[in-house]
Image 1 (tube, rainbow, N blue to C red):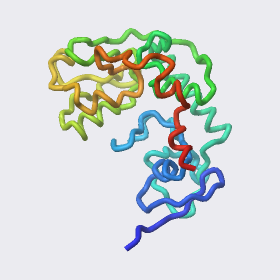
Image 2 (image 1 turned 30 degrees about the vertical axis):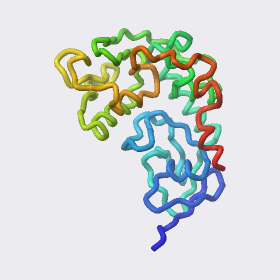
Image 3 (image 1 turned 90 degrees about the horizontal axis):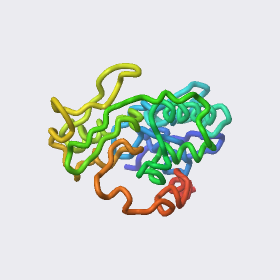
Image 4 (image 1 turned 180 degrees about the vertical axis):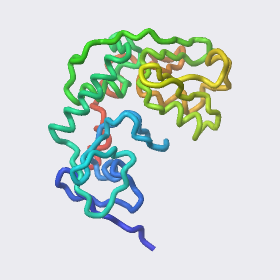
Length: 235
């Protein structure tokens, strides 16, 4: 029995989607890139970053969580939505300490890459200069919470893939942060270098020690092509 197919339109272009797919999954397969930060294939989507916000029949929805439904009209690449995404990216930059020129994740950073894709040269909001914890107690993994954007990828990966629940969110509002399941530091947890959670951070908040500059700046993933290019090449 063949899978049921539904037809949706994204920016007026008709694409086919499998029943049960989200808008983002259908768009990815059709070669239509929808910007995203917290979403990562194979992890449970939760729509927390809002960067993938689209308009569905005139209403705002997160593309990573909204199911594709037959006849759906989706707006993605519009002036309004790209302006909203720029504001979100801007706020993520000023809420943390993202000194790209000194960060070893530069060129492999999704936040930086989305900013470039959206044409952001410098944030328009004032910097908050937060003073957050840095944890270097683990022998192989380093955490700099000044760069954390609270996307939750590490939380989901540790819970759903690694089965360890090393990370969790604590606090609310400006006090919200990623904590570890130990009384003290990351070095007291059972996190391993091979854990999925060690590989999913989209920025430079979770870094593997001793391999950060293995690929020189200028030859990294987003130095070669803009984020989303691998999806758009399918169209």
